[in-house]
Length: 216
Image (cartoon, rainbow, N blue to C red; front, side, top):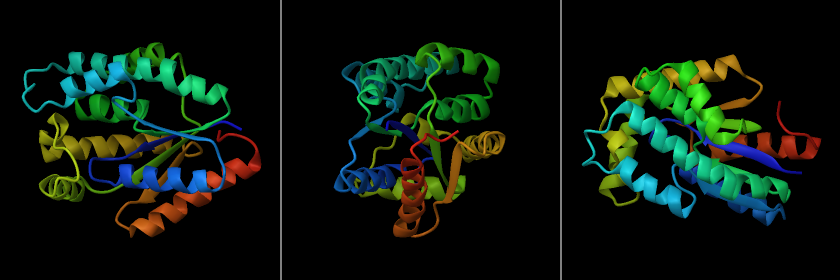
């Protein structure tokens, strides 16, 4: 069966680590798995990512930002996600549409209905079966991200330069979105050890796979 799982969370929450661990685990079990990311995941998307994340692009307008993220997402859906789902694969995506609602909607305070319409157009209405949200405070997340950047384990991008208040709004946005659709979201405390977080994620994903149906 195909399954579309998106990983979401504030910067520094450990999404990339957890998605790599889950990808390796599922492959060891014999499942066909496709791992990708946003923005990026395609040649065109990776070029857009460079523009979006460049710390020198401080003059970028919020409307430009959302359209660029959506352009990358449209390319990813058409070129990677839909073909993989059609082939019966499990898709693990590092960020997806909920990032737009959290960052540009709650963080930038753009109109949520407008963002929903743009996102629906870009994705053709494709939504994840399961959203795994790694929760952590804005302060702790940014501290982790800066520490990883200083040790050359992660990039420091334009979004990381935003204020703590911005990142607090992003986290509040995620929690609000999860509250609206609890059956589609798995909230995991990212302050736990890496192994404990991964175990909770595996339990949820394996339960969905063994049931033979996608999440609601």
